[in-house]
Length: 359
Ligand SMILES: [Fe+2]
Image (cartoon, rainbow, N blue to C red; front, side, top):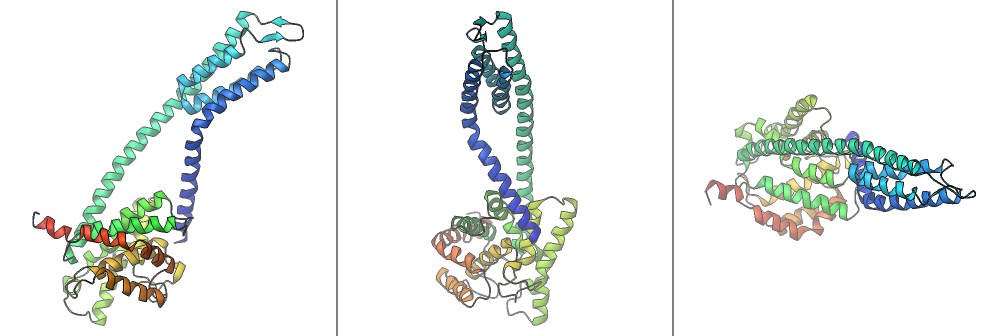
């Protein structure tokens, strides 16, 4: 849990840093040109190009070429070279001008420097973009597998289908609202919301390991059967842990393991499999818990009819008031968007059944 939170916090810092760089990019263009003008003034005021100050011009040229690439860098270098060109004296006090060869060679040197820096900048930028494109392809394939696995689990115990779409939609809405309310913002950023939304359908993947006679039993489970049913959390987590051994740096899998293992933990510590309490339960699993309970309440099962939206909310509120099942912050965020949650549920209600009937 702690590892997840540290990684999420690190991810958020990285994202914010990249955002700042992106936002500042336009300002760097202006800054580079202003800096060139300032350096020109410094060279003139300090007596001309005999001093070392013309070398300062490499700074704005390097900024321009590295941020914007080869040709913007070369254009900036030529303009900077001209600023240091025929109108800039060699020695202002002695009123000696520069020879043409002097400023022309300097201008060419500026341009070559810009070209070299810009060339490598463009090369690494293109390489980065290609890498991002490939990663997106892999992520899409990733999602296709997740969706297929979740569908397999869903078909075993869902009477109506549409569970994946509902859980995904509600999870995204709820996590976004938590961030909007300023809760757990040290963990929740765009990346967290996207990944948690994508892994959410996997929370009950372990049910593929539960025998039909228990999973589909119409009546109440015996104590022994319930113990078997509870193992769907650990079966799912164990399977994903084995996958994670092959891909140890995968944050996606880490979130999937947490929601699979801990989505039946309760705020008061009476849940399973470990009886974690309060903030000991990973945030991802605390979010998943309320989404899963709402969808389960609203769905028809072999052992129960579906509750209405209002009845389901009443049960969730009662659980929250007694401080038993859910994180109060998450319940508050949930109730704030309850109308949208109802809409998402209705939108995907029976969608699996409709698909099966070819409608
Ligand atoms: Fe479950």
